[in-house]
Length: 347
Ligand code: NAP
Ligand code: ZN
Ligand code: ZN
Image (cartoon, rainbow, N blue to C red; front, top):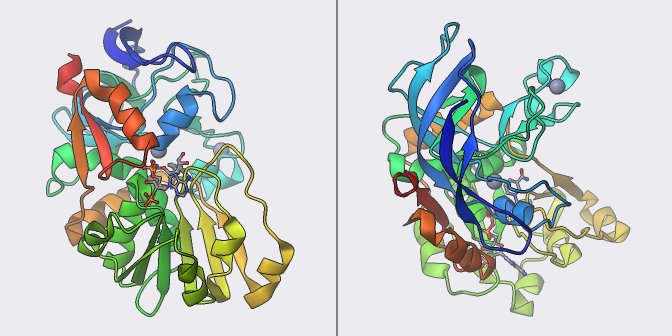
């Protein structure tokens, strides 16, 4: 089995280290990808630090992957050697359940096979994109349009689709007031995509320190949630709120900003529960919803949408040796707006 370079977590508390892992041989339906860039998602940090539950170490994370196809299996028809491709948060699903059959394989009833920490079909634990190569079944591999700069495309594979999916599902568009809570990796993509869909976009950030950026990325308004006046002034005003915060927040305060029949969708995944007051939902017949990544077809739709609208993530490139430092900066909300690992530095 091919041995490849990778960056792995060895425990919940120690820094990630350089190591090697095994990838499976390329099967008839598989594509071997030489990874060029790998984004750092806050989910990677929740995962390696055991915040979502215990995992098996060593573990390689990373589910925002772009690279070039370097080998294909005998039955592969969707990709060819040399293609620019991407892999997001899942690498397979059961393909039989009602959700898989309806094209919502991210909600596979048996659990989709995550790009990392999942049990793969051969019984091994899947290892993610902080590595030089990955082998993935062809229909879970996306085409990355030529017009999207390769160095900044990787975050679309998670941050892009995770925000595109609820924005599309809850019909963000002209005449709709959309608020984005938290302007980090997911949040900044939500701003760009909601703006491109034609919605009126408001950022609700902890402070005004990123206001100029928010307005440049497409927001129409920007408010600090540290200012209590924000919640008074914006009461009952939004059709849709996308909460991208990685930590516990007072969710009722944000729900109170929804107008009649408005929906707050949490994509942020703090380890703690978000307690909701029934009366906050009764008022204005509000809905509190969640949304997990997006389907493969939706991911392709999002990539094509971003190409059409000239959207790319705002990224800061780091080397393989700077990943631990990048994690610390993400935890301090000091990310502008997604770290991407230059996998060439891991070779
Ligand atoms: P990120 O880059 O760290 O962004 C999170 C943002 O939340 C920060 O930039 C900050 O924005 C705000 N924030 C952080 N701590 C806060 C606090 N204590 N109070 C208020 N606001 C705070 O993280 P990310 O990669 O975008 O991921 C965000 C969350 O989504 C994570 O929990 C991640 O696991 C989850 N996620 C879910 C899915 C899904 O399928 N649903 C997919 C990917 C990620 P401001 O500085 O602007 O306030
Ligand atoms: Zn992610
Ligand atoms: Zn399924």
